[in-house]
Amino acid sequence: MHYLRGQIEYRVTVKRKNGYIREYVIVSISLLILLMLNLTLGSVMLPPKEIFSSLFGQSTQTFVNEILWDYRIPKAITALLAGVALSVCGLQMQTLFKNPLADPFILGISSGAGLGVALFVMGFSAFGISFSGSVFMNMGIAASAWFGAFAVTLLILLVSSRLRESTSLLIFGIMLGSVTSALITLLQYFSSSSALKIFVVWTMGSFSGLTTNQIWIMSALILPGLIMSVYNIKELNILLMGEAYAKSLGVNLESTRRRILIATTLLAGSVTAFCGPIGFIGIAVPHIARMFFKNADHKVLIPATALLGAAIMVLTDTVAQLPGQSGIIPINTVSALIGVPIILLIILKSRFI
Amino acid sequence: MEPVLELDKLCLGYNKVIYQNIFATAGEGEVVAVVGPNGIGKSTLLKSIGGMLKYHSGSIKVLSKPLGSYSTRGLAEKISFVPSQSPRARNFSLFDMIATSCYNRTNWLGTINDSDKGFIYKTLRRVGLEDFAERDSSNLSDGEFQRATIARALVQDSKIILLDEPTAFLDIENKLIITKLLKEIAHEESKCVIFSTHDLQLAIKHCDRIWIMGRESFNCGEPSSLIEQGAFDSMFKDSLLKFDPVLFTFV
Image (cartoon, rainbow over all chains, first blue to last red; front, side, top):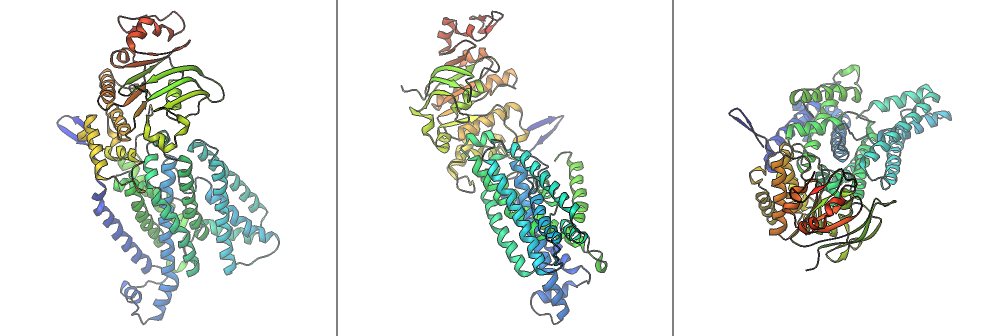
C-alpha cells in the first residue's frame, strides 16, 4: 500500500519466507549463549572452559562432571523442551481462537492437571498416607497431572463436535477451568498443611529434579505434539482469515480443531505434568516472534516461536538460580517478571500487539 | 445450454422456513445479482448454495448434480464463497493470503508449485493488484482488499463464485470497479458469478440476470424483462417506494 504523506512514500511490505536467515541465526546464537550461561551459573559457578572439556569428555574434575551431567544439563534440557512446547502451543491457541490473550492453558488444561495433582497429593493425605520426596511421589504427580490434563481435553473434544464456533469452545474451556479451580480450592480447604505445601510448590513450577527417564518420557510426549503442530501449519494459515473462509475452501474445521487440541494436550499437558503450570511464556513468546519476524505465516512463526521459546525459558531458568547458594526463585515468578516487561516494551514501542 | 446452478422450490431456513419457493437458474458466463430488502435472507441463500448452511426443503443442483452428492472438498472445487467481511491478518503478505486458496491442490505443508505461482500472479494482474504481491494484506484499502478476496476466489478455481455484498462498504468508484470486474470475470473466464447487493442501478446495468427476493415472491430473469413485468415493485411491500423504470431506482 502506498501512503502518500507529503513527499514521503511509505510501503508496508512483508518479507519472503527465505528472507529470515538473519533473524533465525540471531535467535539461535542467543539460545546457545543463554544455554552456556545457564550451565555456568548456579549455586557453584562452573567456568565455561571446564564445561567445554566436560562436554567433550576430557574433564578430570569429577565434581564438575557430576554437577553438569547429573544436575545442570538435565535441567537445561527440561527448560528448553518446556519453552519450545509451551510457545508452539500458545501460538496455535492464539490463531485458533483469533485471540491475542489465548495461552496454552486457556481451555483449562492446567486446571485439569492441577485437579489431578490435587486429588493425588491431598487425596492420599486425607487417608493419612504420606510419602514426601520419594520417586513414587514425583512420578505420581506427573502421571496424575497428565491424566488431569488429558481428561479435560477429552471432555473438550467431546463437546467440540457439538459446537459450531470456536468462540463457544473458548467459553466452554474457560468455564471448565473455573469449575476445576473451584474443586481444587475445595480440596485445599480440607487438606493437611504438608500436602498443601507439596501442591503449592508444584504450582510454582520447577525444572530441576527430573530423572533421565522422566526427561525421555517428556520428550516422547512432546515430539509427536511438535510434529502435529508442523502438520497444522497449512490450516492455521487459513484460520487467520476466518472460519467462514476456511469452510468455503473445504477445510474440515472439526478435524482441524481436534488436531490442534490433541497437539496442545501433548505439548502443554506434558510440560505441566513434569514442571508444573508454567505461565506467561505461552502467551508472550508468540507475540515476541510476530514482532521480531514480522510475518504471520505459520511456516515462519512455528520455528520462530520454538527457538524464541527455548531461549526465553532457558533465560528464565538462569535468572531463577541467580540467588546462588541461598536457593532458587520459583519459575513462575521469574517468567512473569521477565515476560511482562518484554511484552509491555513491545506494545509501547509498536503501539499494537 | 445447461444451467450451472438450478434452484427448484428451494425453502431456506433450518428448523423453520425463513423464505420459500425459490425457483432460479444461473448459467455459465453469467453475472447474477441477488437483490432484496435487509434481512430477507440473501446471505442465507448464498450460504445455502455454498453448502455452508443446511436448507429446509427443495433442491439445489450444481452442474446438474444435487448439492448433497458433493463432498466438502468436491464442493470447494466447484463453488467458492467470499464472505461479506473477511478478517485481515496483520503481517500476512497479499501473495500468501491468496496462496491459501490453493488449499485443495497443495501438499501437507501448503507449498505453492510453479504453475500455481504463475496463476496467482496472473490473477493479481487480473484484479489490478500486480504490484502489491509482497504488501501486508492488512494495509490494503477497503477497495483493494475486496479485490484481493475476489482474487482469492478466482485462485480457488471454481466454476461458481458466490459473493456476499462485495460492494457494501465501498465508495461509488470502487463499487463500479468491483461490479465491472465481476462482469469481466464471468464473461471472459466463463464463470458463474452470483453476488448480493443493494445497488440496484449497477445491478440492472451490468448483470445478465437478477434474482429478486421480494417480500411477496421470488423473481428470476434478465433485468429488462423484470422491469417490463414490474417485478421490482414486489421488493418492498408497501407503496411507500415505487420503482422508476427509467432511473433504475426506487423513488
